[in-house]
Amino acid sequence: MFSRTEAAHLLRALQDEVAWQQKEVTVHGKTVMQPRLVAYMGDDPSLAYTYSRQTMFPVAWTPAVSMIKARLEQETGGVFNTCLLNQYRHGRDHMSWHSDNEALYGPQPVIGSVSFGEARDFVLRHNDDHSQKLTFPLGHGDMLTMQGTTQDHWMHALPKRAKRLEPRINLTFRTIVHPERL
Image (cartoon, rainbow, N blue to C red; front, side):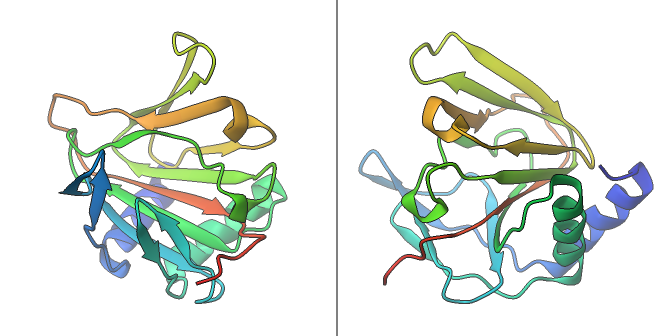
C-alpha cells in the first residue's frame, strides 16, 4: 500500500505526532498496564469507544493519520470515522485474542488495518475450531482489510515474540454507526 520510503516517513511522523498512552486494563479480574501504547482518533469527539472497561474519546486526526486514512479509503472504497492506534515497542508488547464485534460497528463492520515498522504476524483463528488459523506477516506499509462476517466467525491477535523486535505501529480504521450512549 505504501512504498518503503513513504512508510519510513509515516512511521517517524506517527512516533512524533501521536500522543501515545499506556492505559490500565482489567483482565480476568486483575488490573494491569496494557501491553502496548495506544491512541484514538476520529471525526467527532462523541464517537467514544469502550473496551476493557476503559472509554476512549477520539482526538482530532494528525496530518499523518489523515493521509493514511485518505489512502486507505481510496484503496478500499470504505469511509472510516475512527482509528485505534497501537504501538508495539518490542516483542513482548502484544494484542490478545479478540473480535471487533461490538454493536457500535454494525452487523458486518469493515476494518482497515495499516502497519508500519517491524513485521509481525497477525493471526486469525476460527471460533469453532481453534486449530484453524490464518497467519499474515504484516510488514512496513502493509494493509489488511477485515469485513463481512469475519468478526462473527474469527478472533484475531498479535502474539508475543521472545526475540527483541523493533517498534511496530498499527492503525485500525473503523466506522462507528451506532455511537455509545454515555
